[in-house]
Image (cartoon, rainbow, N blue to C red):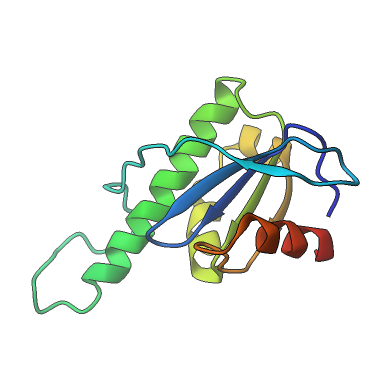
Length: 134
């Protein structure tokens, strides 16, 4: 995958988000970690059950879905504010599916690509290799 300079790479799963910026060029990706961002994980997609009990095994899945929607909301805001011009999303398959439901049209317009892999907790070099191979 070709990543122009200054492309933002969001690497996420249902619990963690890491943001990187490509300081290299399209041919030589060089990711640099960006500061952590607060995510509002209270957002649950419409149609999801809002009831909660300790006996409900879906609570953790609901939390992960809320976090995924919170990531999409944060990315949407950054795109709309002009802070993101090019974006690549690398996320666990279920997380990516949840995030897509909340993409703003403007986010879709700057989205260069998506990679449905769980690379949270992996080294920057592993992420760069996965992007190069995509």
